[in-house]
Length: 135
Image (cartoon, rainbow, N blue to C red; front, side):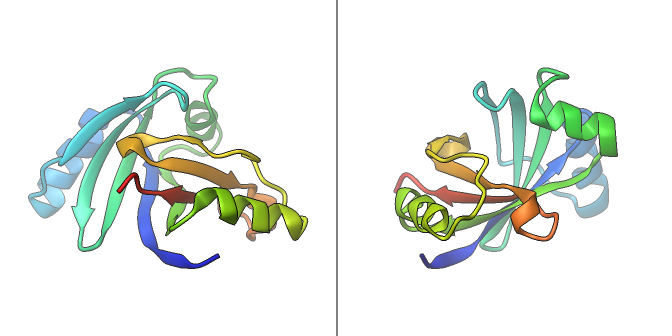
């Protein structure tokens, strides 16, 4: 498996409106893309930063992973995502090494990406996502 780049940092926020106002006030940035990801029970707002992106996450369900994260830890960095060229192969390689995965099969993410999360117990406490772009 080859990590191509840091694709994005996922940041949990109480509302996307808060995140958008903050990014405008701090950096004069406007949101590039907003998308709801029903499978993850979140709405997302993307801000490009060089070759990477900041992905702000708003829970659409308090019992979703992001909703639980906000309840337990408050707003902040939720995960970091690495782009890979083949997410299916990457997951299989990790499983073969005995790595604990949240997703043993990749699933749909924002921007048409396929994603899989590695359990934070395997990464020193950081939730890491593998993502494969559709292009």
